[in-house]
Length: 213
Image 1 (cartoon, rainbow, N blue to C red):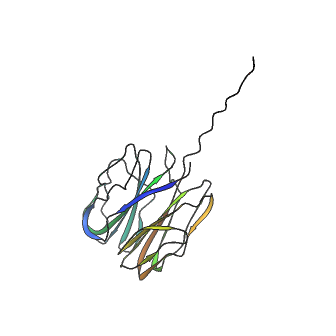
Image 2: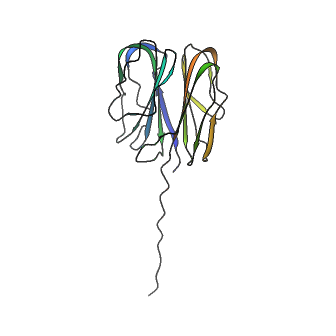
Image 3: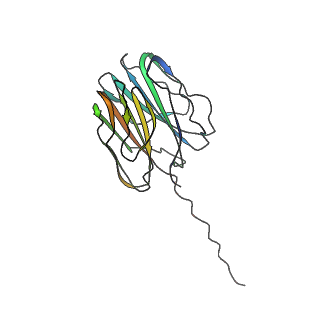
């Protein structure tokens, strides 16, 4: 089974808040994986409390006053409504959510298959993952100031607002996958995360042997 993109949601332009509730991506179904990416700016660094079922993966990514945390959930039902994430004090914040299909049905679907970049954009830096499986790739970017975003080459942009952009790519092969060529029309502190999701292995087909009497 191949990983596929179902839909995405986001909370729009940054707001100064201690809680965000992105919508469950449209069509989310049992067995899907939702990847939720939270970026916060200034206001310290209070711990994030995710909703039930979400696990944080990787370490927090920091660039100056900007912090990015990444979470995932395997859906045990067709979720609806919103997901509420909270922390202890108001910060300028936004979230991206991606809903992916065909992802491995048990265990951690991401593991160490994550690449990050911090710097100043302008031109975003490259991120790269190498997988022994054919992945679904999610790319999410933050920049301190607003601007028009261009996604990495071959990626389809599905999220774009003042300080953030998100995109996905289904490469169709294993190997080394690089997200490059992304830009934003302003120059400020920036963060990128690239995530590779592992597919559910194909099921062995049953073989029926005919035996003569």
